Amino acid sequence: MMIESMAGKAAAMHGDVYDASPFVFNEKRTAIDHFGELLAKAGYNYHGNETFYSGVDGRQLEVQIFFGIVYYQRLRHMIADKFQVRSTGPIDPITHQPVKGRKKGGGIRFGEMERDAIIAHGTAFVLQGTCSADDYTEKQMCRNCGKEDEVYLVQVPRVFRYLTAELAAMNIKIHLGITDFTEVSRA
Image (cartoon, rainbow, N blue to C red; front, side, top):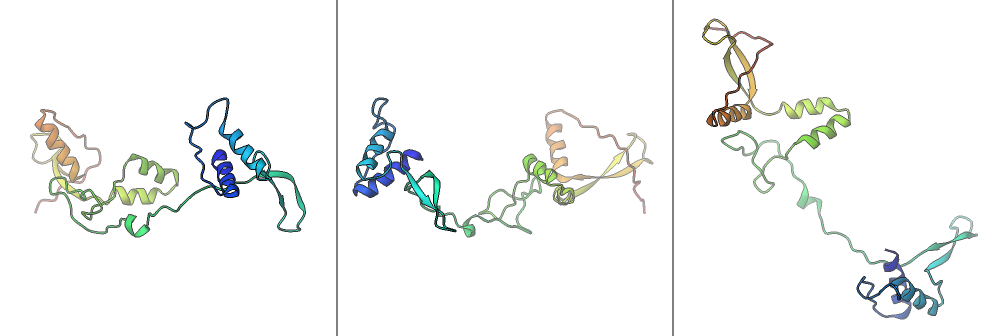
């Protein structure tokens, strides 16, 4: 940035275009030396420093300040092109999760980093609402397999049942230990 500032000021004073890329100069003839000489020829400080005056009382400041011209332009990112919002929309028929992608009207991914940021901000109620907003499905489970009188109702996310089915296809069985019981009412 320092070399670009010096080159910009020298170019403005001499009405010329300069190349300040690292391949133009070497260790014997550095870019700072080259543009410093051009600034000195134009009547400025060799390093691009200038004397400034206070905007409050008009007194000269005690130190010189490095000042130069740099090229910049605004990024053409518009918020209308970037925002993504969804209250309802299409879901994946297999996982029952929101589809991916803004163009498809999908949901925003909420991963571990987002979860950690919510926890760090101390807004656990937002985390609870976000993580439990998924559609739960109820599953009847027997506490002691084989006994019909001890069937309990368990709420699990639908994607958990999908994971269980995929693991079962790989010959891996998941056994859930039930600690909080709500017995199924039989009509």
